[in-house]
Structure formats: structure tokens, C-alpha cells
Amino acid sequence: MKRPLLLLAALVLLALAGCRTIEPVTPSQPTDVGGDDAGDIAGFFLLNEGNMGSNKCTLDYYDYASGIYHKNIYAERNPGVVQELGDVGNDLQIYGNRLYAVVNCSNLVEVMDVSTARHIGQVSVPNCRYIVFKDQYAYVSSYAGPVEIDPNSRLGYVAKIDTATLQVVDTCVVGYQPEEMVIADGKLYVANSGGYRVPDYDHTISVIDLASFKETGKIDVAPNLHRMELDAYGNIWVSSRGDYYDIPPMTYIVSTKYDCVIECMDLLACTEMTLCGDSLFVYSNAWSYITQTSDVNYAVVDVKTRQVLTRRFITDGTDAQFQNPYGLAVNPNTHEIFLTDARDYITPGKVYCYSPEGRLKWSANTGDIPSRIVFTKKRLQ
Image (cartoon, rainbow, N blue to C red):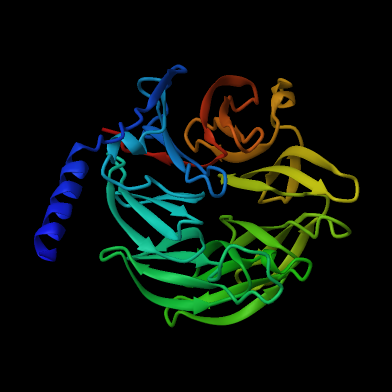
């Protein structure tokens, strides 16, 4: 007698499931900000982090030809992907015909078609941070452990991913809480932060031989390393966030020929940087627990001469309306400067487009905590 009752219960559950309404997909929100001629650059993607724990990582797209800024395109293009992009988007890069989003707290790399932004696959990497590419492989830095402050946290690693199969084929242990990376002369350089081990920060760059995928050494730099940019002269510009108390944030130059620090750019704090030709654009939003204030600067450095050209690349005074500058990018064709504002970190932010002379051209609302911008030569279909 139990079997008919179980069958009846199952049929009821199936009927209820069949009657359940499907949640509507949130459509993207277009804003006309004006078009322009950007040569072979069709537009850019912008990744919004979303506040941790909110599962609100989103993707925006700007189209140069139409002048339309599209907010939140991923959901409508991928209605079948559960929980959409996930929790805390940390990095965004284009390689070949694919768009890669590193989603930190969801422990995955989302892989999309760059022409459609449609889902292709995912790669599982715990507490993943940043991604770089060489030949057929992607390299992703990983904190390895859970998202938590822990003086006994484990060493991080770099995952080696075959871009054809989207499988992790190897890992290499590096320093604590590894961040950004660059590749030069067959070597992968990894900025180790040690951010979970505060106040005992890491202060090294790990050097990995790509052929053997083994760490061959470490370069002692400064505490709490983060950003990296490789110039045309074989030097890495790397940022140290300091300790927020006695050790100030600074920018260091590391030679890839000698694998050592060759200069400290005194008084050049860096929160975010991006390289366009020989011009390194840097903004700093340096917080101090001692003064309880942030010192904000917008600088341009000539990487060839190592001279600071300006400390105010926004020239029209509109930087006064920024609450929390966050993302930074420069169009290599037009030399337009893009800055994002995370505002209060819990409500939608904004992206601002500036002329090469530092005057505001347009702005648009974004998702929460707008962060990484990548330019694409393929117009979104």
C-alpha cells in the first residue's frame, strides 16, 4: 500500500513543479551616451564586482558605433545560467575569440564568446583572482583557501588551464594571497600580497619558469603587493599597498633581465594602473588608519624616462564628484581615459569617459562596484 501513496506524492510534486512560474530575465538597460570613431576598436566590456555575498556580479557593454552603453547584458543573453555570473567579479580579459571573467567568491572562471557574450563553459579555481595568457594556456592566481582573514592561511598558487579543454592541467605554489601577474621572456611573475595574514603581509614576487611550471625564485619588494604592468623595456611596474599605518603605498620597478628591484618611485602611490604606449596612468586612493583619510591622485608617468608627467590627468575638476574611484582604462586608439566610481560600494556605480586632455565627454550608470574594462575589436552581436 505504501507504493501507490509514494507514486501519488511524486505526481503531485511534478504537477506543482510544472505550475511553478519561471522568474523573468532582467533585460539590459541601454543608455545613449554618443558614439565615436575608435578605429578597429568596436567597444568595451565592463565587469561589475557586486558586493561580496550579494551574487550581483554583472557585465556591461559599450558600443562605439551606436554610442549605446548597455547595462547588465549577461542575464538576457544567458537565461539558462543559474545565478548568472556569480559573486564578486575580480578580473576580465579577452583572449582569442573568448571573454574570460574571473569570479572570486564563486570560485570560477566564466568563459564566454566575445562576439555574443554567451556562456561557453566554466573552470573551477578556488578563491581565484587574476588571469593572464600565453600560447594555449591561461594562468589564474588563486588564494587557494577560504575567504577569511587568517594568520595561518595557506600559500596560494597559480592554476594552468588548457584553453582548448577548459581543464586545469597543473598548479604551481607561490606566495601568500597572489594577485596580478605578467609574462616576460618565458617567465611568469606573480605579485604576492599576504592580505589574509595582516599585519604579516607577504612582500615578494614569485618567478615561475613557464617551461617547467616551477617556481624558480622570489624577488623581495615591499609589503602587500597588488598591481603589475610590463613596459616595452622589460621592466615591471608593481604596486605595494603598504600596511595602511606606517609603511606608505608606493610603486616599484622590477627588471625582468636581472629579476630584482631597480627603482622605487617615491611618492607614487598606486591603487590601479594601466599602460598605454609609454604612458603609465595611475590613480591612488591611499587610505591611512592613522589619519582616517584617503589621499587621491591621478598621475601619468613616462615609463621610458621614469618621470611623473602630471599628478592630475583629470583637468576639468569633475573628479570632485567621485566618491570612490575604482576602475581605470585607456583606449589605445583614441587615448580616451575611462574611470569608474564605486560610490558607496552597495548601490550602482558610474563610468566616466574623458578626452585625452582630461575633460569629461560622457558618463553612464553601471552595476555595483564597476571594476575591470577590456576593449574589444569584435562588435557585440
